Length: 290
Image 1 (tube, rainbow, N blue to C red):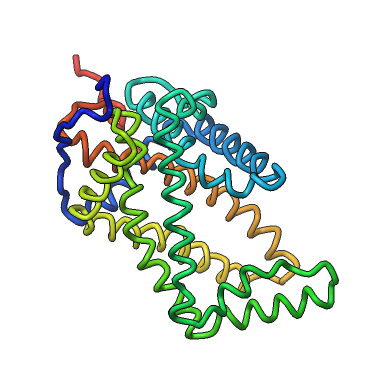
Image 2 (image 1 turned 135 degrees about the vertical axis):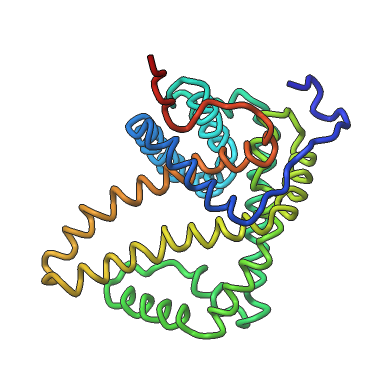
């Protein structure tokens, strides 16, 4: 690794065809499927740690997005280890706290500021309706809570609010692109936070087609497919059984899919910034013939 992250140097990346977006998910699934239990155990630990951090009074909710890039390094390191013959380990999850922590926290701060700016930008479209609803806490009284929930539902269904949320996504895209590969660039190439954000933005813009295909695939597999499955179950079974079956089927799928997404962060980073490397095969090699 480079001893000085501020030393100017050229970071080479590869521009891929659109179909690589699907390949990133496929290859991530193959890696995950070879070590399901270690990945799921690591993922469950991550969720428990994040929930514990969120419970910290005052600072918890702000700390969660700040440390997300730090924990992202743990998943990157676990995938890197697996590709070289090892297994994901829970202790990998905390490697980011020992690898350029300051730069990773800067990435978290950029995420917080970028998303906050995108959310505030919704007021330009809907006059602040979405911000008003989101900033008002749910009342403790049951009757008042029902009225609050009805107002929230009506606001979210309003066409102007839908347009405002779409505008927020558009405003947040530069931030998301700058952060997409940044944790990997910090930990694997020892870049400073500004350099990692800059190179990540360049690589993401150059690879916008596979990233767009990746996003569509994630939406289809993570949103449309579960919704379709739940709709089919709801139409075929009585209401009393739908909830139990939905939990039994969709919860494992949600965990498998979430783990695959975490692995895909590494797969996409490796494919863009280390395309020429020879890595461990994703499927076992065929035994030699006599």
